[in-house]
Image (cartoon, rainbow, N blue to C red):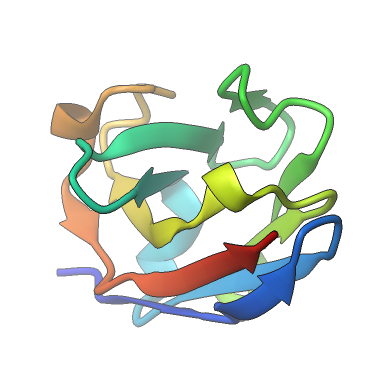
Length: 124
């Protein structure tokens, strides 16, 4: 079973940047698609970004397109989410998740393993 640990969250002013990291416990990480999701208070968890196992394909939610970039380093078992031009509405707990069936999916239900989440707070 893959264990995922997110880090890099924190408090930042609007317009600022943060880089989130998600490190996996196993080398099998390199054959999983990885997704980032977020959940704001009182809202459902939503898709943010996905990167395929090779790192060659990425997709983003419209709300973050052009501001966020997902990448991965399979040698380090780590996926990153670079977040620029942050807005107060980006405030949420951010989760990474792994899909062992390589569905390159935007759906929460397609992901098999989840991290514990990291809080991102953007002040206005």
